[in-house]
Amino acid sequence: MLTINPKEIKQSEVQKWLTGGVAPRPIALVSTISIDGIRNLSPFSFFNSFGSNPPVVAFSPSRRGKDNTVKDTYNNLVETGECVIHAVTIDIVQQMNLASAEVPSDVDEFYLAGFTPVESQMVRPFRVKESPFAMECKVIQIIELGGSNGSGNLAICEVLLFHIDENVITNNSIDPFKIRHTARNSGNWYTIADKNSMYELPKPKFDNPIGYYGLPAFIKNSKILTANHIARLAHVDKLPSIAEVEESCNNMISGDYSLLQMEFKDIISAGKPVTINECEQIIKSALDSNDLDFALKAMVYAGKFI
Ligand SMILES: Cc1cc2nc3c(=O)[nH]c(=O)nc-3n(C[C@H](O)[C@H](O)[C@H](O)COP(=O)(O)O)c2cc1C
Image (cartoon, rainbow, N blue to C red; front, top):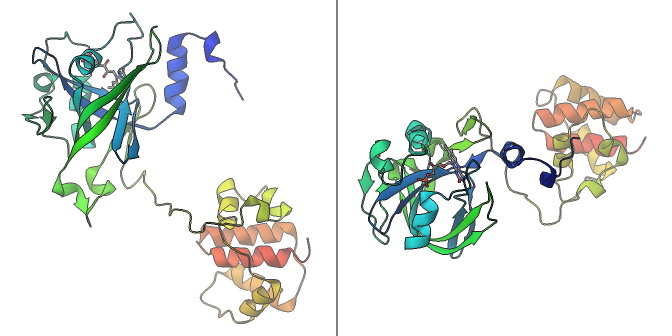
């Protein structure tokens, strides 16, 4: 492992490691307005949500790395205490990028990037019509995280009003396949949240899973099973007894199982010994075909001999 103390390297290097490791990050497209009424729109990926009661989001318009100046967004937040924060979707990513240009303070980035300003209901900054998700916000607190190049300014905001386009809603929730978020990685890289890069992971099912400590050592030390395989075995509330395993194997009907599983069933039914390697192979194959139940049976059976 490369071990780095951020105090011993340049700020630009710190930024590089940080954004490479903390990724992909959601992008906030933030609309603010100056005291003089000049609109501003800029993206920020040092951004997330932090609570739902009250709903709180935060982002960081940092000090510029190159000259330690502060950004227009920061000045507007300090002066007016309001913003509208938008989701960035793949449909508006080029416009978002254009709005990030370091243009003078009197340039209205709505016009620069071709976004349509819509009046907000509870705050002065305008909303971007083209984003399917917007939050009208008031600033709760701005925490200055340093006074040097690249120091963050954490703007903590309460959401006063949500605006959600009905076209991205399915069953009264935001549909991730419809909203098509994009997120920031490091350098010039972005992630698209689409079918190819999204997958489902159900929430933990049990309040008291057996955990890693409930697994036999040969599983935890396996060179065949991955960490993801092992964690799935640990995510059950109890293991079957050896009697249950033997009985259920005797009741297995061929056709419902892979060849490997049927062979293993024969081993179990005959009470034959198994090697660690054989057992790991069958567990891997069962988990890869989503048969956690059989993987657990194989693990318990192997415990008789190992
Ligand atoms: C995808 C993306 C994410 C960005 N994230 C941040 C960020 O988290 N903090 C920051 O200070 N600047 C960030 N920037 C750069 C600002 O958008 C840029 O400095 C902008 O010009 C600031 O505008 P302003 O001076 O009008 O506020 C990001 C730029 C892009 C394209």
